[in-house]
Figure 1 (spheres, helix red, strand yellow):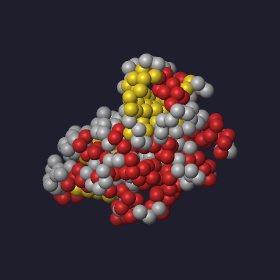
Figure 2 (tube, rainbow, N blue to C red):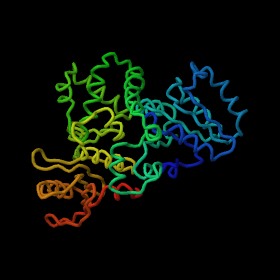
Figure 3 (cartoon, rainbow, N blue to C red):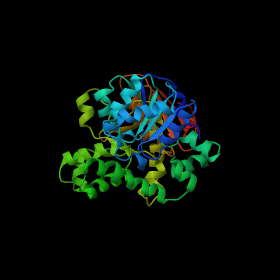
Length: 378
């Protein structure tokens, strides 16, 4: 399956090329596809049990083995590098030998912190998310339409789930992220609080929460503990935070944040809703599309007056499953206010299946079906 991201990744570079993202999103497969473009490339999987215990003392042996297996300038792929202590020394040594080095990892904080120690200015990072809507259509061999959009909102984009259709895949994936990528790696003992926090945020995507409110609602002992858990959850790419738009750094930091699941299917499988919940799934899918397009994203609101779901550098976007006489004035009011923030932005309402051109308080508003908007190239 060809990934959209692959076209943006250079085939040769003096920088380490880093693929990060949630586990099972396809990082290793993408790495293998990139390496297959080059004769003599080598793929090293650090989760292979035969490499268990590999450490810095072994690098002096490993590098000559790689030289023997592969031509001098062929790329090297290092999969799940965070499993190896001081892995950045190995990467630096390979870069210094003129190698192109691809590497993958499942923890943003660990990769960022460790790359900063020895690879400052010598890495390019790319985020691998589960399939987007266009990739979902290609994988399932469907055309863009309202029905295929609803299928995408239900199923999400994890390749293994789409291939095998076993619901336990998404539930075990959630447990693996919590237990292996977070609790085990960070030494979290109170797993109950961590699990409750992740499930709560998963069930309430798109709702703004302060750390104080989360701490009180979930009876977590301290705000600092909640803050650490939120950081761990985001670093593992399970949930992704969105700040409030603000002109000052301080206001942006202290304002409540919204959280979105890394995949709509993962959300559905682990937080069953009594109602279809289409609106929240649609909003989540729009957020993931904006993130994949590399947009800086925030939400905008004035307490008890108006709210706009997403504000980017060039667009104000409201997500609404269906515009009706009952909700249209409220939805457009938030959108108009967002266009009046500093900067110049288009006003867009993303719906399930409506298409129209409206005017609100002198502002032109494009109403677009999500299945068309998601199918566009970013």
